[in-house]
Amino acid sequence: MLPTLLIILWALVMIALERRFPYQRQPFLRREFWTDLFWFSTVFSVLMGFLAARFIIPAIDQVTGWSATRGIREWPLWSQVLVSLLTHDLFIYLFHRAMHVNRYLWRLHEAHHSTPDVDWIGGSRGHVFENLITGTAELAPIVLFMSPEVAAIKSVIDACWGMWIHANIDWDMGKLKYVINGPYMHRWHHAREVHDVNFATKFSFWDWLLGTAYLPDRKPESYGLDVDWPQNIVVQQAFAFRRFQPKAVLRPRGPEEAARLHRGDPEFVGPAEAYRRRMQPEVVEPRQQERSIAA
Image 1 (spheres, rainbow, N blue to C red):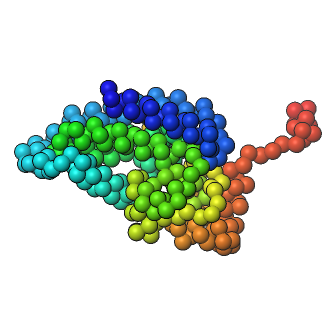
Image 2: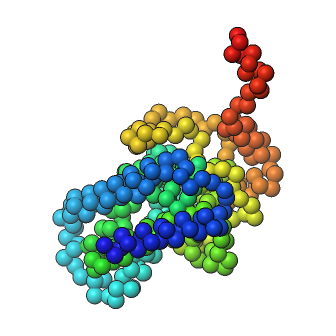
Image 3: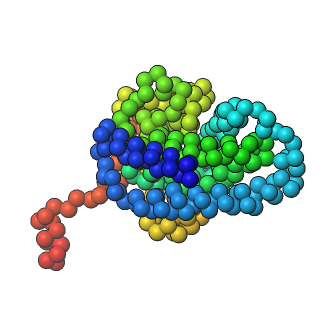
């Protein structure tokens, strides 16, 4: 009960800060808001946790027998939480990076990038298979090697941190941005104009140390995907298995190419302008529209 209450209170704080200090102007009840709140934040989150705890982790333990070991259960609780935070965050960084490189894994991850309005609740969206993989990777070491209290503490930290890094809040965090991830860096991860930057979830130093950090002195132009994302929750999950098609435009990948785009490199500026024209809806002049109707 307490973890749920803390998560709800944190959500209210995020909403208040978004309204007071918006990074960009965007609607509160935006498209698919209720889908994110009900299906992704609640139903899928609980379901994936249940499947991991009830079936997958016991199967792992049956093969390995790891739960019979002491693990680090006798360590102070704070140190167990710290180990879980660091190890899982490194795994998420590496797996996240792989999902952006491997086209099959990207199909599972693209649901997370599908919202054109990045906000406190938008970070909850994702494909059920991706959530099952990342959830198992986090929960299995806790169940097999750590105290059960770690799971409850981590659930609150994960939920609150996910809301924080996706929040539409205008705060660059100063020097903290080199250690802790926040909205400024993660919104560039969701930007449509660049790819493959800022993979970290909790600790931004993974990006700074491993060469994937990108934080220019400007704001992203837009967010979301290049495809027409379906609105139906069932179709969204099945959409990952559609036929592959070649990419339509050259897109900057990684911090170096992103910097070249923003410096005005023609190799990337030309395709970027063509992409903007393609993504903008066609504007029909009133007289032309009248002639079309009359015809």
